[in-house]
Image (cartoon, rainbow, N blue to C red; front, side):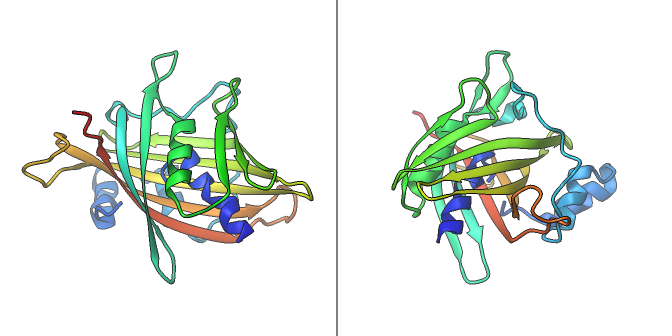
Length: 243
């Protein structure tokens, strides 16, 4: 139970954490572009080892999204497992930072995901005002979850496909102990055309995504760091109807 709660918040730190065909994307890679670092990484999941080639972000660095992410989205995240498929309905927001770059509203996104999931114990979340790469969540029973992004890479494959990979250090503080782990989340987003003739959200596209996550032990615990848990999710983002 602790490990389940320990990892669920991280799924949304990058948010994305879909249903559109992998085969079509694979054909696109084969015909139009050479395999990239992240597309190759995705292809070998879940046979991952902890990545060593993700660049450590500077204090002010953030993950920059393509312009087509801008706005507020209704998100359906389906977490797959061997036994069943868990669906979480939440919201996601992408806004311009002070430099005019499009970034995720991490505080808003984390809180929306946490409050709409079935996991208990979440009270509030705050970003580090000095860095977009750190976040603090207050939990029940005098517990705190600190997350820090220690590795990142992103690739814009073309005007419709965008891939991100982030490695996060998680530190769970409790009155009795401190527990540390590393979580890698790779997400492949695709801009998908709507097949609805009367789209109530008045958008001619939505975003579908596939998300792959691996949890590793804390740094330095093993010489060869294999995942202790893996998880896969599908996401659909539809523009929120603000009318």
